[in-house]
Image (cartoon, rainbow, N blue to C red; front, side):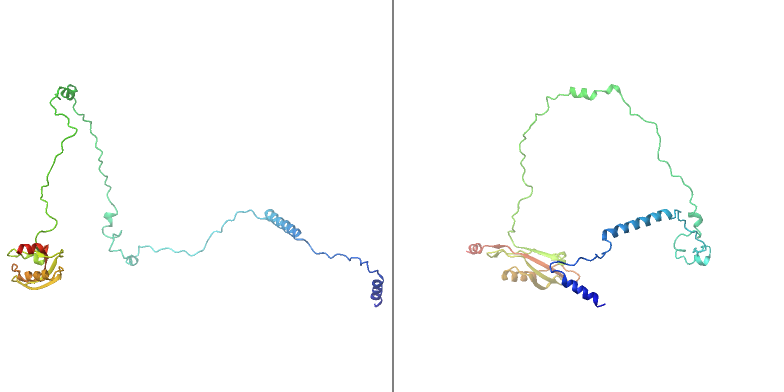
Length: 268
């Protein structure tokens, strides 16, 4: 057994250095991917062909269902079961005393509104044909007034006098429930010498049953202290018509102002 390797070593040692050993037989690597795909396709085609050749072609018929449990509602002929109906006495029922009337309604035919009548023609007189045209031709158009294509302007004056925008004198206005109680006398207010316009002064008053003012409060000042004090003094001096109880209302003083120089010149 040791001689064969020795001989091989001897042969290897005796082979010239430039020469190589002859190649041995090649190992088989198996089938390629393309070959596997072709085989699989052939097997699949053979399987489909066998299914079509030997497969059954009978139509599937479902089996008849028998011996199964069924559910059916009980008949309402039982009186105890009919009492469970919540609408037995609230709504019309086919077994109540009026069922014989509303279940058997009489067959009433609706009346026909298609009336037929022979045509009635309007009277026509052939003698009056053209009478309106004859009257038109006999009319005298010479006396008609001439056509005026450009009439004169009709001037008109306003019926109401044009009043100034601002009041010329101070005014007083009673508002609220107190407006129903009248003042016996007319109150005259003075104009204030002030260089600017004063806003309305609102005074709230409380009037007793006799008509006397028992309380006054300035709700909205006018911006001029003298005018506000004058408004309070006038409100306290007012006397209203008697009533049954206390009355609360508002008095608005619209003060009219004039330039201070005008008042000074007037006093001079």
